[in-house]
Image 1 (cartoon, rainbow, N blue to C red):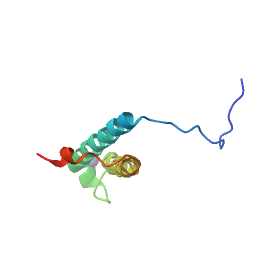
Image 2 (tube, protein in one colour; image 1 turned 45 degrees about the horizontal axis):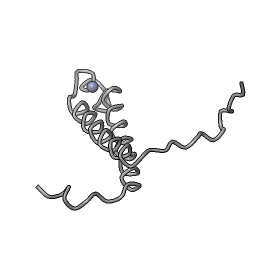
Image 3 (cartoon, rainbow, N blue to C red; image 1 turned 180 degrees about the horizontal axis):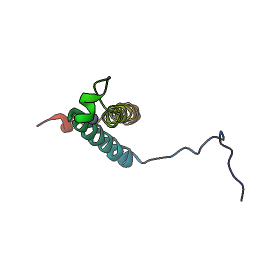
Image 4 (cartoon, rainbow, N blue to C red; image 1 turned 90 degrees about the horizontal axis):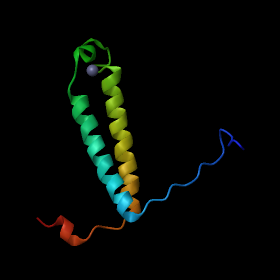
Length: 87
Ligand SMILES: [Zn+2]
């Protein structure tokens, strides 16, 4: 079996439009979850000189990564039909 080198290009992952839309919703949920977690400061946050512990800083970093990927994915998707914006 042939192994790929560490820097070999990775295969592109293709998603259907429906899969991409689902992934986008999952990213939005995941970002919200991480931001809610990060808002719940703990005793370690109070002790930490930066004002937040590593766990909570990691939550914020992940939330930022999820948002960046969601924006990128959203750009690749066609605009939703107008009806989706109506109540
Ligand atoms: Zn904390």
